[in-house]
Structures are given as C-alpha cells and as structure tokens.
Amino acid sequence: MSAPLDLHFREMVPDDADAVELVEKACFAIPWSRESFWREAANENTSYTLALDGTRVIGYAGCWISFEEAQITNVAILPAYRGQGVGTRLMAAVIEAVKARGVTAMTLEVRPSNAPARALYARYGFEEAGVRRGYYHDNGEDAIIMWNTKL
Image 1 (cartoon, rainbow, N blue to C red):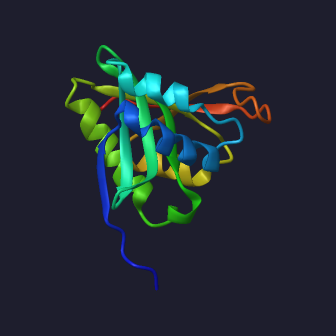
Image 2: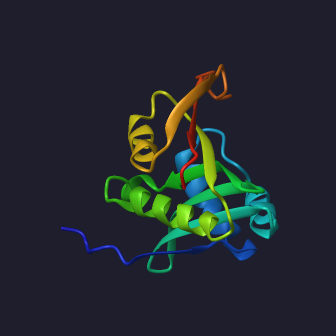
C-alpha cells in the first residue's frame, strides 16, 4: 500500500509555473506553456488553485473571473494521483476560492468522452447547457458546456 497523501491546496503564484507546466504536459495532448501559466498566475482576473502532495504540485484548476462568473479553463491531476479523491477535493477548493471573490455562477467545457470529469462536475451542481462543435483541436471532439448557477 502506498503512503497516504499529504494533500493540501493553495493559490498558484508565478513561481509555480514550472511545476504546473509538468502537470499540464502529463495530462494534455496540446499543453499550455510555462509562460502561459506564469501570465495566468500574475493576472488579477484569474484564480488558479494548486493541489499538492507535500511540496509536490500534483494538480491544478484554473478559472477566469468576469464580474460574478467564473469560466473554468483547465483542471488537471497527474495520472498517478487519479482515482484518489484529489479532483473532488480540488473542485471544492476552487469553488470556495471563487466564491470568496464574489462569484455566483461557473461554467466550463468538457469532452463528452471524459465520463469521470462529467460525473465530478455534476456532483458539484454543474448541468449540461449546450455543445460546442469541434471544440478540441487535437481530435475535433465536441465539448459539452456545463453551468452551475447556484453557487
């Protein structure tokens, strides 16, 4: 049996860009760059929450904030840490972070093929609201638009 996680969460800062880029590259076919994460962390209209196991960044979730709405841009958990409740706890931390900034509604896009993510978002009150045709550049897959308007 592996050691229990020393799981905790904190806001991303620009110095975290290298560690976040490693998670991004492990999770996505077309990853964002380190520079993109540095800019996002420095932007006052974003909120990025890191999941850490001790001092190691093992996941993150990011949002763009516009007035009372947040658009989730990315959610990623290192493959070795999936299925251990990290995503569930990370979503709770992200929602609390944006609510503290006055957000009352959140939206996101998710692949129809990503059943675990869709189930996670549904547990947090997100409901399907539409489809973006051919949204994902790597394979042309559609995206399901989901909203939670009852934060």
